[in-house]
Image (cartoon, rainbow, N blue to C red; front, side, top):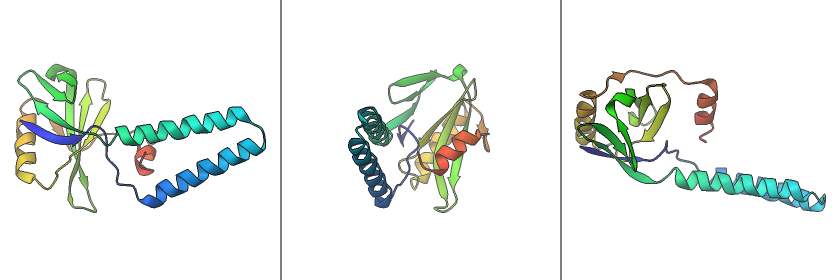
Length: 154
């Protein structure tokens, strides 16, 4: 059984966010050049490049596949005994299941956004089969830092 997911939590970001980001970075680079601060310019450039790289990598589509002995997500395989639980996150504004969160033995969350949440039949079959291998929780505890990053859609 397989489910199409994004390889990370997928956030829908508006164009305004990127325009403001680019304008801010350009302003900092111009000020750095005018102040003859080459180190600051390079640092800002690396941060901007890292953000752009992260955003493009987190939007890749992949598959979550249930095997007899493991769960495969993209090129990583997680044996069932290395996983504790999973959680389905509900998007209240869109009124549908949005994310599937896999928690390992250390309770580290791995969050994947479901690509086709409107395909409820396939999603239900996948969840039913997943429950046979690991239990489902209603919610999981997130750190304040994790909640903050999710709130600003990073």
